[in-house]
Image (cartoon, rainbow, N blue to C red):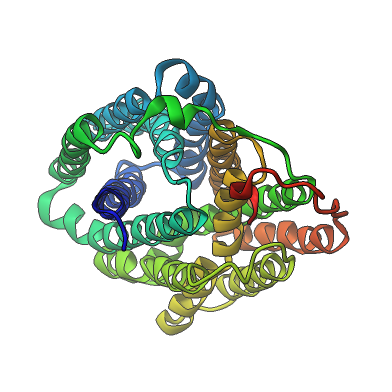
Length: 397
């Protein structure tokens, strides 16, 4: 029978990721729409989404492991969440594109602290419990993004730019209030910083090889995914879709992602295999080629579903091997988010520039040109052998 403390923690990994990433998703689409309304070019939108948000996210994620070790995961979760909420509220005051550029690093840095610190609590002593938590976490944050993206266009038009950003900030503040209570009174076996920081395990060389592949694939597919997200509103508007319809169509990405998360959570059958990475990359290549060529709502939604599913294997593997390949798992979670953040920097930046130079379809060809050689790299990637002595069973995938 599952202990009550584990049930409560599982609920945390349902409620918190859902609500926080709903706020993230709402803000990302609404910032894009607000920038367009304020007259920003595609390059400026790419700078906004890539450099200002993404670099702040990436740099803070890289240092979060050390900050968790020094100040504790609880403190970093609350500090990061508060900074993110502050950034969202600041968006609501923007009356020129540069105002958005000022607010974006605050929100990005807050996210770069919040998510790695929260993910350090996914791991439990029981590997099966870790798998359940990881699955709930991934499905919940994806469902939150789906809800946020779908609601974003409607909220932006119904509430207006300022109130829509402030509503997202209010949602993230409510999450912080919940976490402040749970992190204080939660079961010590789950929310114990001293135990959580003892995260250095013996290294499994083969699992580390899969971790490095996962980082490469995760970067590639988040590059492609954020490139699509940056350009899609401009493409959809050029095809005369309404803002509400744009949000609904963009939400299809997350249907594909949550669907495959559900499949991968069913067991460990995909561990220690290259095939999931290769299938994800191949599907991503098909998706970006569809975006480069189709114009009807049906095909655009299909491409969105496919690219959402395509980035799931790399993302889930990055968390799994980061927790179970050995070394400092706090740092691994920071690296996971930093690699993801690097894709979120370069994808929007290059796609915005390419759209201004080569037209709104050009960014999708850049993504295709990146995915193709990564498929070859994964095929030929050398794999270390399993370690003969695994004294810590929790390191077994």
